[in-house]
Image: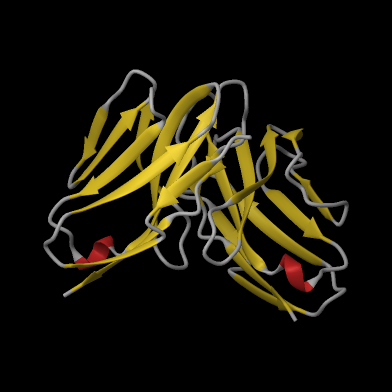
Length: 112
Length: 113
């Protein structure tokens, strides 16, 4: 069964600190993996998208990694800001399928 | 439009009533998706349109749910005989043909009392 699991479920950090969010998937055949940020009351917004051959991709203070062998991805946030408080959702798509498989998300709270 | 627009942003209804949720995708986006998101969960796929036709409706939970996109642009998600379990945020997303990134609307929050 195609699944995406994220950890931790929730996380609280202090402003300025770094954090890493984890995503494990069992989707096959793998096409690409995306990280989305979802602010409260808003739709998800894409942060990065990675294909099978990509190991690392950065978008400002966000750096995503992908290990297609172990089927794991991480999202590292550097020098966190209060505006980083949101849910971060890992999404995986499989070749030949139109629907994306969403993880439940990690709810991040950045405190001053 | 500049983004994906969804209306209403909030809808409160009574059990058993009929509800319509509207999605206006980005102009020129041929693919349109509906997702349902319950509190604390990731979005769950409902239906995917390519143009006017529903290419994949395997996520619709039962026959009370139906969606249309008659002119290949605006889509309407229709829910008959609403139940309390239908309460969720209904998200719409669109993308250009062949593109990987979905653009999501802000969602329509449905509450069934």
